[in-house]
Amino acid sequence: MRRHVADVGRNVHVNDARRTGFSSVITRHDGATVVSLAGELDIATAAELRQALADAVTGPEPPRVVIHLEGVDFCDSTGLSVLISAMNGAEAAGGRVLLSGVRARMTRLFTMTGLTKRFEIRETAADAVRELLGA
Image (cartoon, rainbow, N blue to C red; front, side, top):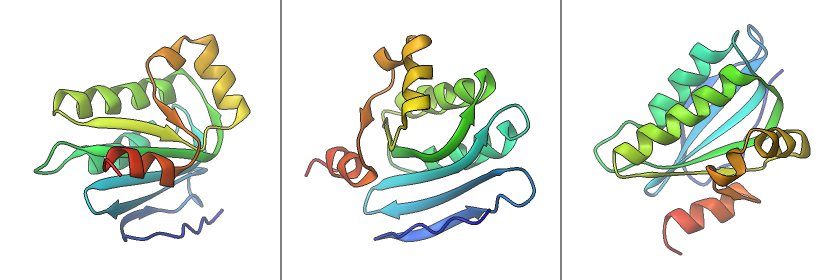
């Protein structure tokens, strides 16, 4: 599977899904970073997911990150753990993480696990970026 992501910034990391059923595209937007994920977030892809999110939250400024989940087909407890760890890491560095593009299946998962109280969810990545940049 290949995934094309239109962006207003520049892609700094692309992970192709042909090998693992997972892909990520990291795009910088004037102080905010969008991580667009596709495929499955599970034990088989956890290391790649962890690396993509670490790349997004690492930097000289407090991280402002949008994790765009529209292309995610499946997420297990390992995938949830990696998402929570990324959010905790960003917050510990004085930053913030928003989720966007959350489809019905992921919304049910977040509701069942109580994570709707922990994750801030916005409809689109553009909405989330605007919020993070204070526009």
